[in-house]
Image (cartoon, rainbow, N blue to C red; front, side, top):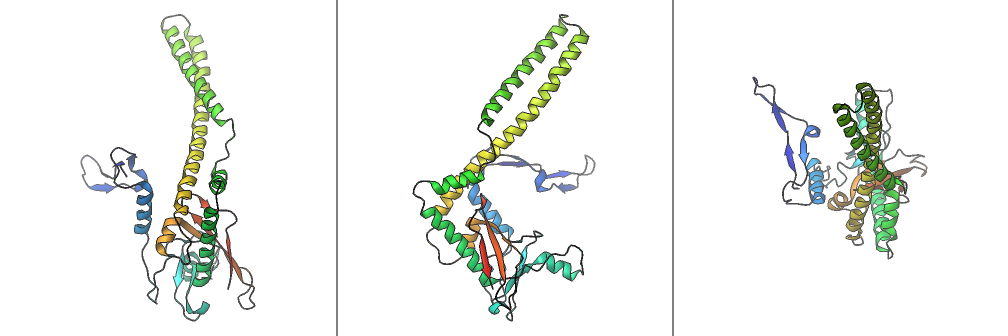
Amino acid sequence: MGDMVNHRQTIKSFKNHKIIYVPKDEWIIVSETHEALVDRETFDKVQKIAATKKRTNKRKNDNIFSGILKCYDCGSNLSFVSDTRKYGGEGFYTCSGYKHQVHRHITENRCSPHHISYHVLYDSVLTQIQRLIHMSKADDNGDFLQDLLDSRRSKVSDDSQKSLNMLNRRSQELKRVIKKIVEQNANGVITDEMFADLYTGYQDELTKVSAKLDALETVLTEAKKGETDAELFTELIKRQTSISELSRELLVDLVDHIEVHEATGSRYDGTRHLETEVFYRLIGAVGGLGGDGSQ
């Protein structure tokens, strides 16, 4: 991607040269220091594929949902169970956190199974993605993108940029004033006591202004990133044609993860319903597309 990565490893001390590998979140990364070989979107996609083990079920079918199913309640991954006796013989997914707790005989704060059959999950996710593609294709006036921008844009008031400009101006003024009183004190124009009072007051205000600036810049940066991500995802989804089936490639392209809720009702009297929610890459969940299945 054209980034320079440093501090991947170090040594224990200048006497002990044993190599210590530094955790990835402590690496020092400087962006765009040289020409990129691949764009960030492609890089992120490949890393996601590489980080997920490719498994097949007992029927030797690819598990296209591997690594992207999450339990809504505890956040654990859902694992596939190849059981031909249940759910039409196609197998089902269940919360791995729940399975671990049962295996360890943990009863306190135990999660629930979150069982969902393969075909119900497949149909629910396919329907949600089809709806999203249909929305993007039916968009002639930019409404789809605008809706995404409105929903992803951080809660920033119209005066945020004005506030940022005012704070920047005040910060520069305070720095000039502080520099001036330091020079005046050095030249004997003001006493040490007066300098101490003035310096403390101006420096305290500068600290508060700087903190407000940092917070506001963070909010505005996140808002801008949200808008950029929405535009990128709009381009990504509009590349898709009408789809009639899911594939691993399609899911990796569009989906970050899928949350599976615990079911309500009973499977034996036909009242069992459960909700699945697709969280898309770059933008997260899209309102009004949630899947509700029965099995």
